[in-house]
Image 1 (cartoon, rainbow, N blue to C red):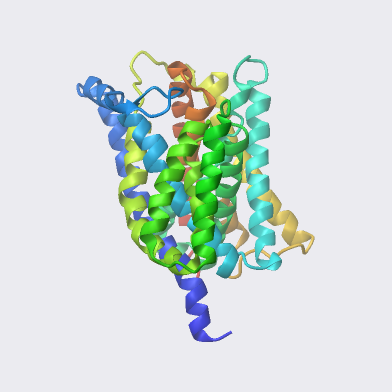
Image 2 (cartoon, rainbow, N blue to C red):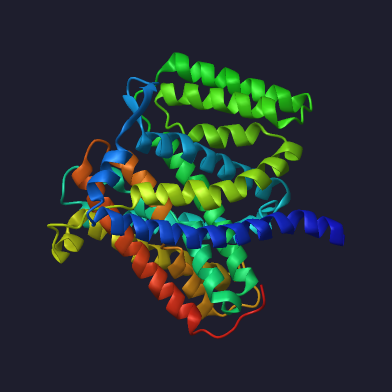
Length: 390
């Protein structure tokens, strides 16, 4: 493999790691600020602004557009567009192009989603109405995790960072499939048909080697509109659009979206969704089935699923652990994968629509599990000795 080819396949992922790391730090600040504001004299303004009606009724099932709806259903579609572009890039020319490269991250990601879900279902089984939240602790927040790895610097080897990124990419694929298949309302078939036609038009543009971004972006906006009407969650439009964009425009679009998503969209989502009023709550709320199931799913389930699967893969020679890493560093990485913040909060909103009291419990469980995972993972890696340079 030539040096030029190496740069073309590795550099985009390295750039993504760097942007996610810096964006993760901004996300931490935005989320902490949301918690502070939600428990301050400005709390009423904060919650009123989020639910303020700002636009027309686009889809009757959703009602009038609010600030919160624009952020979660429109801006997050842009986030999922970037996720789709990254997935496509890694499978076409990145670290997931061959089965040998895919084996370890796919195994770790699947186990890292399944075990937390099992923990959640086991803890919430005796409480009716909570089973729909099984996917909440299954997701990993790559921005938050990479932010902590950036703070750790050279104590986290480059191979460890890249494994976490590839696990998170496969994890995102699973989350997208779950959202599409599990958290989809009654379908509006004509709207879904219109969305399919728009997507077909995007693939036709690619087939005729159209490399201008504008037609793809206009059709992607139209695709979002029809998917929003259809009952499938609108963010799926972002992933679908990404699959239709050819490589030449993909690289340009990724360069534009990376900073926009990392420094604006994801922090804004964190600020809009992390705020929970703790007034009147006692520490006992952490032992309620819903927050406890989420917290233990993230903190215990993730580390068991990811570390256990990597250890088993190495022992059976199915796949080797990352080069230049110790088992304690792999364990620290598995702990960081329990930070489920952005995607967990997002799925929580889909799992319990119209149930604000459960959404607050979701936030508490996600915050508790993510905080425990972040602190434990940071301490393990901080004390594990220096790794290879990034």
